[in-house]
Image 1 (cartoon, helix red, strand yellow):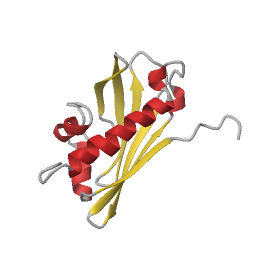
Image 2 (image 1 turned 120 degrees about the vertical axis):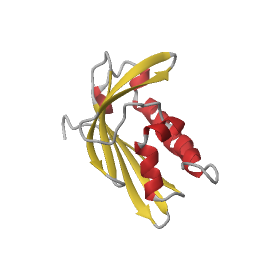
Image 3 (image 1 turned 135 degrees about the vertical axis):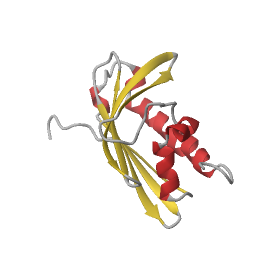
Image 4 (image 1 turned 30 degrees about the horizontal axis):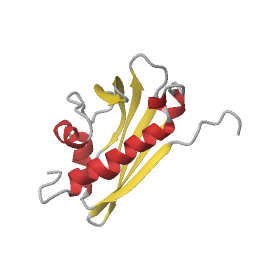
Length: 150
């Protein structure tokens, strides 16, 4: 049990939306910027590299990512690291159809590889961020109105 990596951060939510609609929200750059980040060079293709910026506590971080796995309407994984900082994590979105609803499981593994002295990289910072992104931002995008997420 020694030297075992800490448990990944997992956020799950079921949306009142079909898998196709949730998948498009996760993989279409135009749709992503409405609830996630502006990622103009994102493509759901293995090996695709992309960047985006995010801010925390007044500091802007450049995220460097590479798509590692794509199973259309089922799974999307990409590496996630920060320019100028040590560490690399793996972010995975998995989709599970449940009738006309979709259960999404987000798994963010490897958070312990980031500089732990930086509060922006603390597990609770990621927990709060993903909780907002999945349970508020994506939920509102997919379920917010008659034409939400379309």
